[in-house]
Image 1 (cartoon, rainbow, N blue to C red):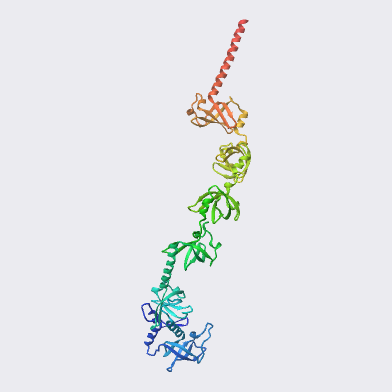
Image 2 (tube, helix red, strand yellow):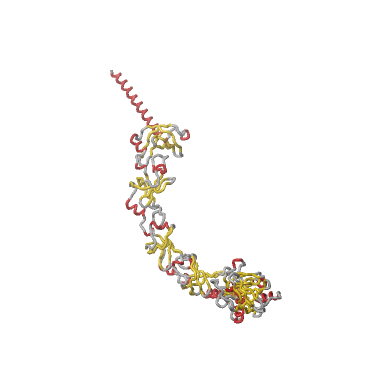
Length: 570
């Protein structure tokens, strides 16, 4: 059976019979297939071209014995499609079979066979030859590989599947490989190659180099072969190792493409080898002196240093201290402003800034710094210009369930719901929206906790203040019971004024006997406009009434006695 592909004629039975354990090669099996046909010939045949017709694909060649064979034009054309022979030219061919009593010829097969012969004749068994080829076909036993290097160009080799070290698939046709010649049979003209043996030997050599690198723990030079986003592949003595981007600098992970170029020579040290994955890990920073050793002696927590901002992220900034050491400036350490949204609003890349060292982790080689610690505290600046009782204007920064934070320059003060309005039912959310400008009074400054308490209602006339203008101590008023506590009863006097009647001031009345909403009369004990407090007393009212009754009685008794004496004198 004939198989024509790419201008090459091959015997299918011959190819399928190839394997590592067989002595016969392609040419031998082809010759054996010829012998099955009495009319076949074997070996090279010297012929002469006798006819070339433009409208026919075949060329007639006189091969002797009064026989004219057919040689396809595709076998004797150059890359431009021009014939390389003319009528009368002699040509060496092989007979590949017969069709209608006419020999079928192959010029390309003869060329390949000649190349095989020349290769075998010149082959040195001690040469340990490695060939480069391209897979051009396959069968049950393995693959047909055609040489493509200067020495083996056009020579066909057999690569058994057991020696291929390849995952079998149709995509292997055309794949370029390197393999080692493991068997040459001059008698059968067969050449067997092994990719597996080459790979095994290369791995063994690399393992020796890797073991030496790890055992010696020395700094060696390597050549950068490839740079990726996660690191660099470096060739050290014929072995490729990966320098992960975290092993390039003591600063931490860096972008290797910004620091190095492919082909550049670098000093590295082998740090690990994964036997299972056959991965060699290299380190550039391990080949350098550890700058953290010097840092331990030069700096300590609390020191202020000048640094260069190298990178800015939403969560913070990275700063360069020099000598391949990098520190981290968290966003919370950039400014005293608690509402900071992004560090870039305060600092910029390549800017030199003064920072304070707040943490030094020598074990994990991490350093944290603070910018705000070297800046004046806004709270201290605020205290220099303000005090309790001052009236200030601020902006509503945040609304909460318990009140509102008012931005006063670079600090925030708290306006609690109970200090926003005299109406207990009104909250800050009902009065303001974020961004509103509001005038408030500073009612308390907590220096230890650095907190400012504000009030808006104190800028307005309160219900107790209005009440005090119309009432005074000793006035009898009518109130409504609002709430009962362990220490007394709260009552409403109207216009938002609440008053307290302590248990001891209830007199003959008992708190348990009073109902919520019940009216009760009492005398005003005192009015405190500063603390918005009013106290009442039923007992005082009773005493006042007793005194009034006694006075009235006395006044009445004196009048009656005078009248009697007056009458007697008459």
